[in-house]
Amino acid sequence: MTIHLITFSSALQKQTSIYKMHEVLLSELEKFYTIEIVDYKDLYTLTEDDFKLVFIATGGTEKYFVRNFEFLPQPVILLTNGMQNSLSASLEISYWLQCKGLKSEILHGDIKTIVHRIQIHYNNFEAQKAIRGKRIGVIGTPCSWLIASSVDYLLTKRRWGIEFLNIPIENVTNRYELISDDEVGEQAAIIAGKALACREATPEDMIKAMRVYKAIKQICEKEKLVAITLNCYKLINLLGTTGCLALSLLNDEGILAGCEGDLQSIFTFLAIKAVTGNTPFMANPIQINLKNNEIVFAHCSVSTKLTEQYILRSHFESNTGVSIQGILPTGDITIVKCGGECLDEYFVSSGRLLENTNYVNVCRTQIRVKLDNPADYFLRNPIGNHHMVVLGNYEKQLDAFFASNNCKRAE
Image (cartoon, rainbow, N blue to C red; front, side, top):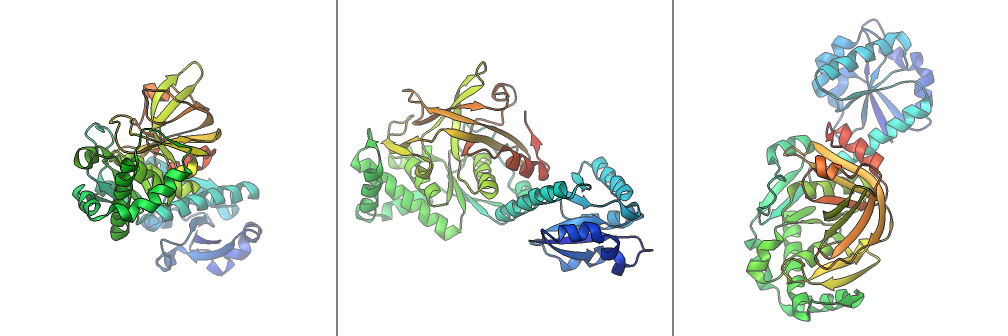
């Protein structure tokens, strides 16, 4: 791992003596990283793929920082050991950023603490790189009831570097008609064979659901999509089936797939994957017990790779198609949602999955979880309906990632 230190020093200080002046700090860092000292005047030699920190080497550098601020990485991470009044300059710069509503952090003091914080910022940097330039397909427009889940395409592209691509639902139905039963029959049998049971769904339902899966996958390959969100309810009227199984299988294969055309949720999928490497379960809160700080989440599609076992069911609301009733492992989980039209606010809480429930009048995959943070967030200040459940405790990593991108945490 290479750290490029964008170095600010006063005109009185010769650049050649920077390393010697700060040898104690830099030699300690070199035990963990490759260090490249880059004079701020040579900023143009670095690319967006280079990991950079701002190194305040001396006092009297505030004016140089201000002149070059727009070219510096965000958030601004200031490294200083205090030599030559460098800490004083860092404090002044940090407050200047604060007055402009911008985020910064000063790395100073114990080397272990500095290294720990650098690693967090590097992980965030890598996650941001993983998101930047990605294309998300919006198939069939968002469902009409998602009145608070819209996203401004232009502003989110500026903030995150992602692109939302609108795809007519007819692109799916047209491809669906060209796919024969024979093309998907063998794979449908394999999936059914791995299921613990098959209840309402018929063999004919399986074939139709698999044709939808193959049609959407073809679109993903053609458009180079890393993620899609599908207005699955339009398929019910057009094809007499749902997208639940298709979304499950796409998630199994690493193509992130969410329900109902929910733009904020599919971005949350992308962020979770970038930070943790894991695919989440998208769900509705359906019961909240404030006394026990517990919530039941449910939905009709989940990646089969997240489950210990799964049952093939019909879609709950329409009683058509094929959905997944997944049995998820108990243990640590994290609840996550990034929202707002600019995707600039978020909620995150660790917790524990206590049991898989089996209520009759609820979506098929159901889990009861106990949160580590107050569950009344969902009644006081929720970021919409859908929330993502990721297996494992990643609250600190996700909190650091969203906070580093100037997102506001909902409590």
